Length: 228
Image (cartoon, rainbow, N blue to C red; front, side, top):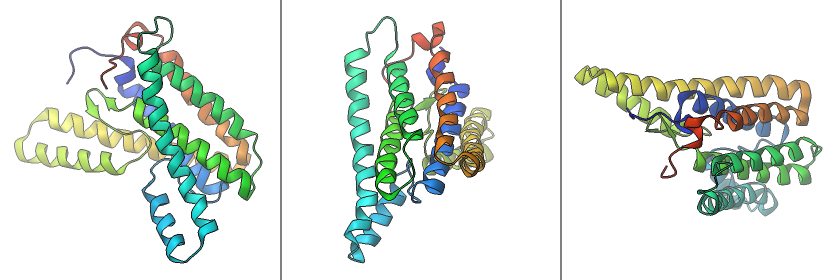
């Protein structure tokens, strides 16, 4: 466990972001042409399937979000490099503000094949900003926009506890499974609200990002470690 707590690294922050991550995946799948915005593995698989079938138009639905995800990683690192010494806003807050603006724009794009391609690319971009900027929870490497790595790490730590009875391993395992649980909660909320509000439902995810934005104004958040 880490000796100095910081809000960008806190479980509360990770839990809120995991809810947002699950929400966005449900949102794009339900009302934006069944594309996964967060983890790109599914999109890579669908890309390969469409290429194998000679459906190059369909392949475009998946390759553009993948490229948008890559672009988000590059821009996240660029913002971090430029603004890491900013005395007013932490570079993570700048990225959150960027995400919020993009999601508000997405909410007002009607659902159509052309608009959905743009929307899925923008949300993939947002998710890559998030996963690159918030990479740890209490010192554990945890993703808030996907679950596979968290499931592996949480299970590995659970096995370690069963073998050694080391309570720290159990505590860390619970944190991984906790983030997964909040991701599931976010997906469930996203499914319900998207079925009710359709494309505008994404505005609910903005509230989660705004919450994290203001959490980082605390003294601990302002001193967040730039090395992670």
